[in-house]
Image 1 (cartoon, rainbow, N blue to C red):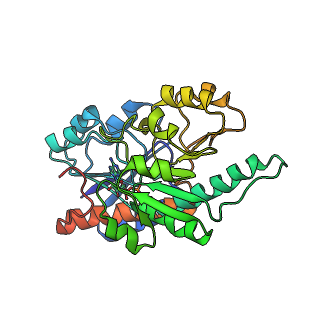
Image 2 (cartoon, rainbow, N blue to C red):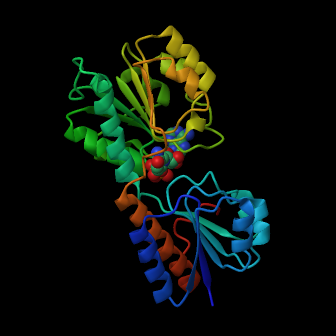
Image 3 (tube, rainbow, N blue to C red):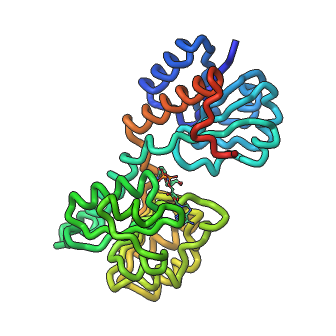
Length: 306
Ligand code: NAD
């Protein structure tokens, strides 16, 4: 019988697990649960005879793939899939998918929530400012970026975007001003919100010259990945430009150094963007449905290692 493993160091919420179980069992498959595991060995043992795996931020590397002799598909319930070794998966003939869009609204709502918190001086009792009329630059107009644009327009913000792969007319059709480069986006915006994936091209790409080109009082908000930030350069810049603020949902490696910029830096204690009951359930159910679609009908939509 086809075995589907849910391997989650940080488990799905109980209703999500129940929904996944229902989808898997209705398809005639067996569900195996490995939650809150603490040793890699537990994962290596659990994958030994399964056909499919659903993960969250769990790491799937060559060692795990070697141990999973029957494995055909891994689905990362979420958007970013930098926790899966794609090359090794392809070498093992394993299809890797993500579940794009399922947590996009959750992340976008957090962006606007963090921005209100920031422009109101972290609720310290002092008068702050408003988002209406401010220029918001969205770097990458994917699922999260589009949702940020939708909500920001509701706040009355003036929204700009740049995406290396999304055509300008698609951006403009959403009522957002498309700019020609990320350099231009940083120059024009009062606030820049990052929604690029962590790739070889984007890692460390948010550097001193880019952020340093922002207007006085600029705010950089990152709900993407810490790896896209050049941390030493951003620290140097924040020390020089005492008007700039950095807000992030992914605690930097150099958190202690950033924390010295009191009143100009905030990090959520743990990545919270996708941590809603709705996103959790949506992504888990989508992952289960994608596994059934792939094993029963060979559907490879959302495959990321083509
Ligand atoms: P997505 O795949 O829908 O969109 C990514 C967009 O980035 C695409 O439109 C793509 O064209 C664009 N892009 C890729 N490389 C680029 C580059 N070099 N320059 C400009 N644009 C580029 O992904 P998404 O769902 O919008 O999520 C975006 C990122 O946010 C994810 O990759 C993930 O790292 C992060 N994320 C974080 C959380 C969280 O909990 N904070 C949750 C979900 C996603």
